[in-house]
Amino acid sequence: MLKRRLVLVLVLSLGMVLAGKPEGINFYNQGQYEQALAELKYVALDGDPEAQTLVGMMYLKGQGTDKDPSLATYWFQEAAKQGNAPSERTLGEMYLAGNGLPQDDYQAAYWTRQAADQGDTAAQVTLGKLYLDGRGVERDVPGALELFQNAADHGSADAQYQLAQLYERGEGTVQDRAQALRWYRMAAASGQKAATEALRRLSPTSPSAPAIQPAAQAQASRPPTPAVPQGVSVVPPVKKRVALLIADQSYQDKSLDLTGPVNDARLIQASLVKAGFTVTVKTDLTLVQMNRDISSFLAGVDGNTVSLLYYSGHGVEIGGANYLIPTDFQLKPNLTATEAVAQGVDIAAFYARMPAQAEGSLNITILDACRNNPFKSRGLKGLGDGRDGLKTTGLTGGNGDGTVETFTAYAAASGQVAQDGVQNGPYATALAQQMTVPGQVLEVMFRNVRQEVARRTANAQIPTSYANISSEFIFVPAK
Image 1 (spheres, helix red, strand yellow):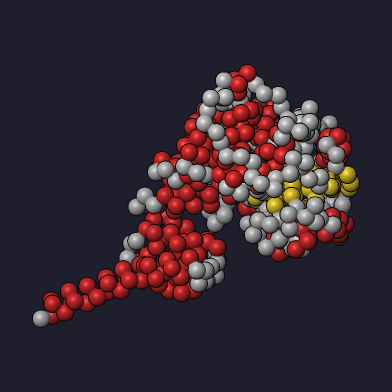
Image 2 (cartoon, one colour):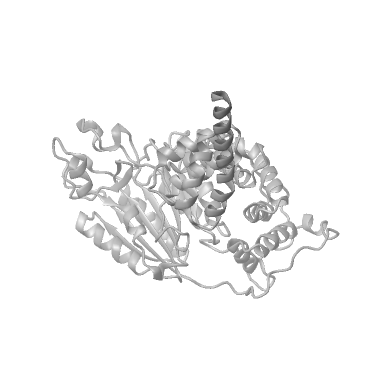
């Protein structure tokens, strides 16, 4: 009798768990996250990988509960053990961005590849981008092309846009404008903003449209492709371009002095002026001045703005956040993390506070502050944890819903030091040169900067960047 009762209890419990999954998924899809979590956590504990993934996502995003990256990681890892592709992809994204896990390009590539091998199209796109950048993997343009092609054939608008770019540039394949237009049109038909902007740029009425390549003419017999979406203007909208360049070089504590920031800022200023930016350069700012000038600069950003903020000087990671070091920073003995934070500039906080008027803007942040840890030689603990450079993560504008677009670039990867040149550093030199190359899309330009700096420094310094953008931006249009 007792045995029968135990079996009955187990059967009833299993029935409740199975019943909880569809209800939990339904709650999740409706945005009722507290109810979803209540239903799905028991299913997750029972080992269901789909439920584990959704529970992990709610802890990662703070949906229906407080954000808890550690719990999110646990659930994603449990699901990944069972080969759940969305969890594998998410682990890759977390490693790539340093979100809840240590920033690690190699781990990011590993987990992303696990998901991509199972046919996860989003993972295939991310892995393709890693191949193009050579992040965590050897640079492999043909491999990227293959991944984009597969994901594009399965309807990924992002992959279609990436594929179009490769055909437009002739990177990894024969340059083919007809194929580029074909894939741009397909991506634009799915609502991909950058593809729509590329179609404006490549319109026959646009002076910047490249000539049709001979290889493209051979494709004339291919089946017809979707037309440009109705309502797409052939005249690209003109946005105002503004830039604030800050160079902290001469510190009140002379042990912090640098030699190159001012020259680097002036070099980049010249390139930005050629690219049509209105540029303001500030040097050797104190804490009050830096807070005031950055706040004022970003307060003027609206939906018709491309803003660029460049900082060259010292920066350090404290408690998982990045702080820029103003020139009046007091590096006293026994300095605590709390005292250091009070004297530093939390750059991420400025973007998080961007007002609603900034929706639709594109904000480029370039942090040439991956220098030696100024606290390490003093033996101060908890200030950068003894590592050099900054924590390389993407900045998020406004409420983080993507309506305020951000592109974040670092002079070096996590733990690396950006070289400080007497005249100009290798990062600023490559950046200034690439900014004036006609026709380069933002991500491509920074990819070329990455390759050039890595070459010049024998891989001792490898820049990195993070894109939270949906638009297409080019510093200097193609001639």
